[in-house]
Length: 150
Image (tube, rainbow, N blue to C red):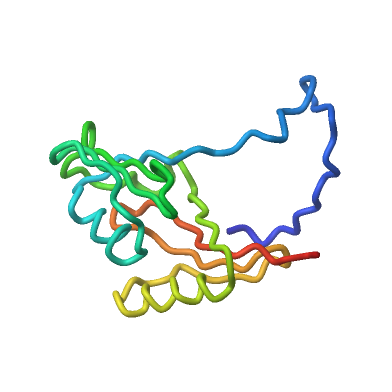
């Protein structure tokens, strides 16, 4: 991550191109191309603890937390056995997984240590505390806990 200071813009009802997006909009799920379904399930379901919710043979799987239909989808439709994108190319920087408490983020860290998954870094951003790492296909992950400002 760059070390540049981020200055938050006030939330506005107007954007540069017109009205702002509905504030009720949410991100539904992330769908990743992976090289090996079993390896990815071992990481996301085995190490991180997500629950498998659906599977389509050996080509796709879906998993979530808390009974949601799926927070993540993974597939090998275009990527079976393939390498991760090389450095210096465009793509997703990371996906953030938000934990509800600092204790649950600490549990995630314990799981990563037990599984010997290396971290790329950790940070206290003032708004949230975060761990940075890569999944088995080199997709960036941020595991975070938002600080409570009440």
